[in-house]
Amino acid sequence: MFTGIIQDMGTFRRLSNRGGEILIEIETGLDLHDVGVGDSIAVNGACLTITGKDGRVFTADVSPETLSRTNLGRLRPGDDVNLEKAMRLNDFLGGHLVLGHVDGLGEVRERSTQHNAIIFGIDVDESLARYVVEKGSIAVDGISLTVNRCKERRFYVSIIPLTVRRTTLSKRKAGEVVNIETDILGKYVEKLLRQEGPDKEAGKDRVDMDFLSRHGFVK
Image 1: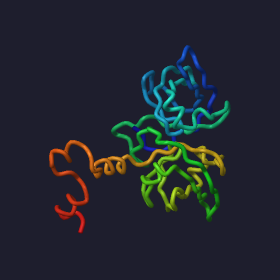
Image 2: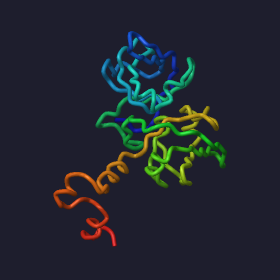
Image 3: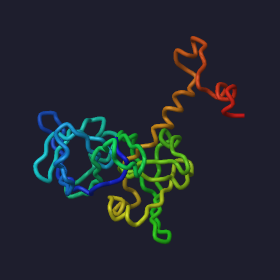
Image 4: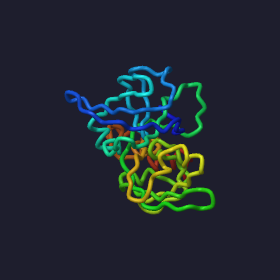
């Protein structure tokens, strides 16, 4: 689990296939003494497992599922990537709870400057747009951000100068794709409200609008 507070911009070195095993190789300025083989690290918001490290370089396995859902397969040698080590239970939660499970890709459609902030307008698929809400949390390339507003499939985020300087958003422009992880809470609520499952057949109480109304949560 992560917080969405980027700790370093690493450098992508290569993606290699060794006997059917796909490996990503990243160079970083992060102190890797406290992480070992088997530990988790987020690369552009995708949770990967470290399989080896040598000085400032680490490798991680990348599954076909990860390649299909993220922008990791589009990286070129020398590209910057956002890095965050897995959080500890006694860490400050400066962003929001980020699982590192990328839902899909978003496309940067707008980039503008407003006072000292940069505003990004990002389009996502309809299957993701329903989980994006105004003033809700979202992770873009692993960065914890607050949604300013939504317009159909497009949402807007305002980036302060510090975040721009310390992350890959400094180089993102219209037409480029970013990894998107929506807030997990919306997915759980949606599933609980669905009219399906064994509870329906058994006639038990489910968490639906009728249940909420009967128990005084909505009027």
